[in-house]
Image (cartoon, rainbow, N blue to C red; front, side, top):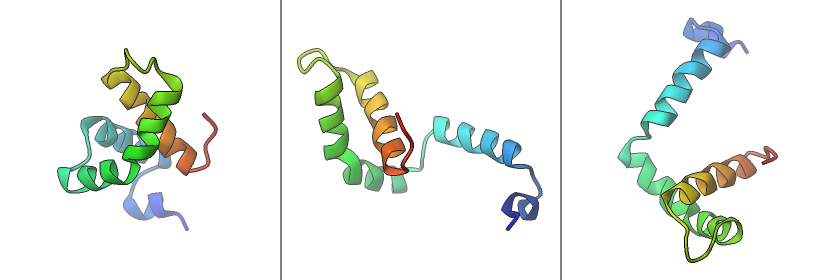
Amino acid sequence: MDVYGKLGCTRDDFCTMLLEEIEDGITSEYSAKIADAIAEKVAVDVLESADPKEWNACDISLGVGRVILKRFGVDV
């Protein structure tokens, strides 16, 4: 199915719009549910990849990305 064509755009155009929305943020209605669902996996990722005494928000951001990519089966 050409879902992009049915939406009147190309895949590249849609991915550009999607990226902007992801970088801008997900609505709080969904972001709270996402955070709750992945909190423990992200915490484990931060513990395994960052200094356990000097970690920060950047480590969480990277952890979120890694957890989500792994969930979709993408190598990180």
